[in-house]
Structures are given as structure tokens and as C-alpha cells.
Amino acid sequence: MNDNPRPINQDEINNIAWKACDTFRGVVDPSEYKNYILVMLFLKYISDVWRDHYEQFKQQYGGDEERTRRRMEREKFVLPEGADFYTLYRNRNADNIGDLINQALDAIEEQNKAKLDKVFRNIDYNSEDKLGETKERNARLKHLLEDFADERMDLRPSRVGDMDVIGNTYEYLIEKFAVGAGKKGGEFFTPPQIGWLLAKLARPQSGDRIGDPACGSGSLLIKVGKEVGTPDFALYGHESNGDTWALAKMNMFLHGMDSARIERCNTFSNPKLLEGDRLMKFQVVVANPPFSLDKWGAEDASEDPYRRFHRGIPPKSKGDYAFISHMVEVATATDGRVVVIAPHGVLFRGGAEGKIRKAFIKENLLDTVIGLPPALFYGTGIPVCILVFRKGRNEQDILFIDASREFDPGKRQNRLLDENIDHIVTTFQNRSVEDKYSYLAIRDEIRENDYNLNIPRYVDTFEEEEEIDIQAVQGEIVDLEGQLAQVRQAMDGYLKELGL
Image (cartoon, rainbow, N blue to C red):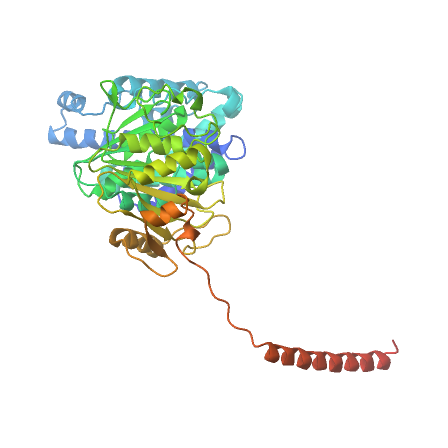
């Protein structure tokens, strides 16, 4: 190993990690092979960090192996002997390499239960169903180990510097997998620009508890945490999918936020973020929950022990207001902020949803409604909105922002630019009114609209058409008809000369 490694940049690491995906591409579904790639990246990183620390302590103790080992045992993270990436790489030609990788992951999990308990239980590098029969499987795993053994993939802190370089690569891969997974991708990843927008709208402060009841891979929680600007915050999340929960745990670890508490559970039937027999409270609650979730648990909502649905029970086929109701209930009473992404239907649908919406408005909890451009999310082209709720607010109005026309268009997916985000955030913070962009509606206006929050009712984006001079247009038509007659006459002459 080079003792004076040259620095490596983010793009190099990203590209090498993405190239490793070729081992599985076309053989294993992206929603499946992402786990194999991301776990191997995780293993490579912790192995390099461990080796880096070992060498530093060994040098500090004058080469004394025994003192070095004792010092390493006091590290907050333990990498068991023989469970590191390099041992597996040396054994890459073994007939049972898949089983050896599984054993290494089991050993790491066993030695680090506080941070990684059950994180690897859904990943099987020896799976014939997913990775093929023994010969094919061994060849793929050998190629995977060789890709990550690339000398440019030396991830020691002495080389990469900031730990977040690896966290960024991890999120880069998650985003690439989300694109490839289409609609499924939206279930575990929020596009970065949307995440940063939500983080800024949430205004997290030092000392805040930050929660996400549908945290996916944890990228949104991490962005909100970074927005605090100090390490004095605590992250909490619920995630029901086992694979995605594992991604969140590893993502937190790689971003240096491994004290985050991420629970694998159903937010509605079995919430695990509790204090005694009550739901834990948060100063900030954010989420990009699944849109209009079917069969979310409406049949049991009337018996909810936490009374989250006292304003009304959302329809069983549309769980949008189930998530919103939960989020508002777990926000702290005097200063809680809730920022949630939802389909536009939550703004105007009637029935139970209309009843719940009316209750939120009458309780003066709804602060801001923001309309976003279409096709920002993976696997769906529908436009969505952001709802901001605030507990203990003094304003008696609701700010409407129509940001649907400001974006960077793409072939498959649109994205928000920094200036688009800044425009939204500045308007939100100043509660400013801007022609064809934002409007402050008083409660009477909203009541007159029967508590319908459809944004065009409040933000007039109608563009007057330029007045047309009918006589001038008629003159142009006559002129064009004359030119066309001349062209036809000339064509007839050419055809006669050709004998046609």
C-alpha cells in the first residue's frame, strides 16, 4: 500500500463504484443488486478505516503489535480478525467465497450490535436464486471483489480526508439505483434537490430532535441534520422495508451519524419511536411518504391508542392524510415544524380528507402550501406539493407558492436548480407576495372556498394573450396566397419543360 497516497476526488470514487455494478447488470434486478454493491462499498470503507487506524496506533506504539491490538479493541467500532475486505479479496478464488462473505458480515454484525444489529440479515452472497449457480456466482463475486480492490478505491481517511466523501458515494449509488428502479426507486430515495429544499423549509435548530416516519434510505434525515450547522441534533426514523432499513443504517454510519435511531416498523400499526406509552415528540418532522398508499391500516385507525386520527380517518385507499396526521401529532406542541411532500389531491379532495384538511386550517396549523414542477421524482411524472405545518404560530394566514414553472427540464426527469430553491425559500421565509408566484390568503378567503387549497384559486398565473390585429393577419394571408399562386405557376412551367 502506498504510504504517500495521492488525494482522490469524489468523481473517481463514484465512477469506480458504479463500474462495479457491471458485475450484476443484466443478470440481477437493480432493486436487488443495489444491496450487494452498497454492502461491499460499506465493507471496503470500514476495512480501510480500520487499517488506517491500526497503522497509526502501531506507529505510535513503536511497532508493538500487542499494545496496538489492545488499543484497537477500545475503538467504538470493531472489525473482527478475518472479517475484513482484504481477507475476502485474498480468498476470491475460493469455491465457497459467497459463504465466506456472509460469515464476515455476520461477525461484523455480532461485534457491533449497538450500531449494526440485523443490518445484513437480508443480504445473502451465497444465494443461488439471485446470483446464479455456484460457478457463475463465484465468478461474479470474484469480479466484484477485484473491482473494489482497485488501487484508486483506497478509502483510507488519510487519503480521502473528509469521511463524507464515502457517504456521498453511497448516496450517489442510491440515486443511480433509484433511477434504474423506476417507480420502486421513489420508495427509498428522495432526489437531492428536493431533500435540501425540505431541509431549509424545516429550519432545524441546534438541539432539535428530527424525525421521519417514512425515512427510506435516510438521505432526507441526513440533509436536515446537516442543515442544523452543529453536531447538536438527534435523528430518528421509521422504515417498514427491511432492505431499505438496512440501507438507512449503513447510510447513517457512513455519514458519521450512526447515533441515529432508525426503527424497522409500520408507522401506523406498530410505531416504535415511543417514550413510555406515548409517541416520541420532535421539533422537526419531515417526510416524503409513499403517495396515496393503499391499505395503510384504516380499518384499525378508530382504535389507535395514540389518537392520531381524531380529526378524521383517511380513506383506506389513500394514506396521504394518515402520514400527515401522524406527523402533526408527533410535532412538539409549541414549536414543532412539519414539512411533508404529498400529491395535489390532498389540497382539494372531499369526504374524510376534506374534513381533516378543514380541521388543520381551523386549528391554525397549516402554514404554507407550495406547488412543485412535474416529473421531479423517480417513476412518476405527477406534480406534487409541499405542506408546511407549524405549531404555536401567530400568523392567521396561509402562504401559497406556485413554483411549478421554475425548473431545469430533462428528458426523463426534471430537477430544481439552486436559484429555484432559493426563490422558494426566500419567499417562504419572508412570507412575501409576488405576482403570479405567491399569495397570502386570510382564513376568510379559504373558508369562502370551502377549505379547498387548490393553488390556482389563490395564485393567479393566467397570462393575458397578446391582442391580435385581425386586419393585419388577413393581409398576411392574402399575401401568402399570392406567393403560393406564383410558386404553383412556376412549377407548372418546369413540369412542361420536362414533358411531364
